[in-house]
Length: 327
Image (cartoon, rainbow, N blue to C red; front, side, top):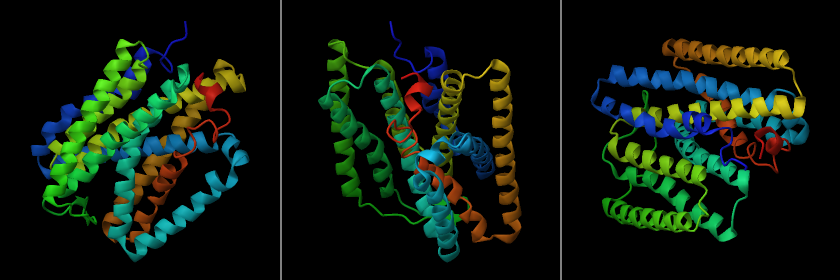
């Protein structure tokens, strides 16, 4: 009997599903001092560095993506990085707003992508079921981000003020009602599929854990920096776990590597990510003295990562995905 899990129940729960709910234990830190919140944010930054380094390992490890679609996976990187540097030099607040809000949406939508991998594991099911999940879950992930714009006060990321769309309270109230209706409909729909034996449980738990966690974090966290950190931490853990599984599958099923060669690869893999993280920390430390917008422009590497993930986990854009993940 084929398992519905990507790797195993223990691995998937530990890396892909539980972290987004487990991070809610840090919610009481919202009442802590700014120094404590900054420390949590720094921890999320370090973890994010490992996460981004993992992405580069995936992208450039053996030239698969380079050969398959050079414009999408390589040359777009130079364009995005140059554009990020130029925009940060011209208007740092605008650039950081693009980075932060695209990042928040990117964090949310990764959970949808993981759920689709689970569906691909056993077949996506009917088209109506797929479209129903797609519309309802995307609304449940996006509406909290939009509704929280009704909060008073300016939003800041570290010491940079972000652009903010001031949503009227009445509009936020109506969107909250829409959110409640959408959640009720989706849960009833999931219950109906469960009763009929058609519910993909790993996919459902992935989506439900994300919906619940994003709702709680957006509505019950006052500190914008803490909110971002609480979403970023499980996002990075989830991606690292997925990449580890991808590399392991590719080494075994496609490369046919021996255990020794595979171990050697993972040593280089972690060495690369650690060096990348240390470089990022050094640049941030240097920028405390110089406050150069050009260093912020290096976040274009992260934005390029946002871009790459729009495609790299879809079979039609990654010819080795199904074999690597055992789909």
